[in-house]
Image (cartoon, rainbow, N blue to C red):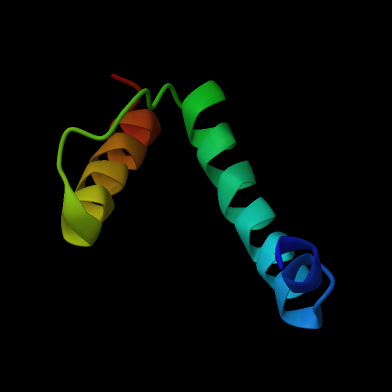
Length: 60
């Protein structure tokens, strides 16, 4: 069953999309120093990333 799913075109598209997301988070963790999100949920994550980018741009 799992192999049948892995051979579908939808699964290949899903893999590409997940890879893009993982690369983004890897960049945030490695380059910008984001270890974990303190604020939970989509809005909290957006707020925290915005704050991180603001601090990164200001330089403090």
